[in-house]
Length: 133
Image (tube, rainbow, N blue to C red; front, side):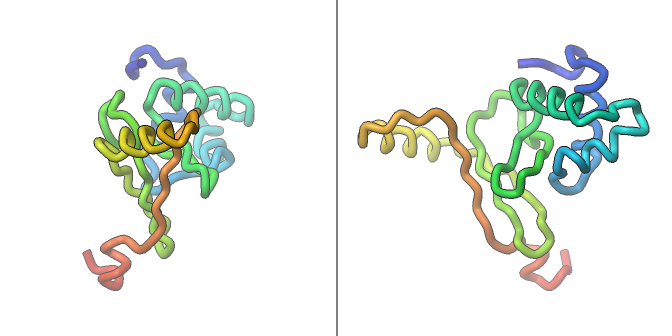
């Protein structure tokens, strides 16, 4: 794991852009936000994102091909993403207790899990209330 002071300049700029965003961003949206700070090439963005994911500071949301900064402490384990189909807000939900049960069930069936992505789709509370919150 890494902390902010161990990050390269590009990694710090990318992480800051993700933390400043109210929603997940595609790599090209990150590029648009970071270009004024000198991170201008797609390979720079992808390298930074790859390391930030490895450090546990960023998550890739597979179904929407987007990235978001981690909302919980580094090392919290597996998470699920609850994605609002109306406003596209994404909530990060720790899978404490759930992930081990899923992995155990897969092993019991003879399946070797190499990666886990849990994504839930629906409507957030704010959208269900008609935009009031």
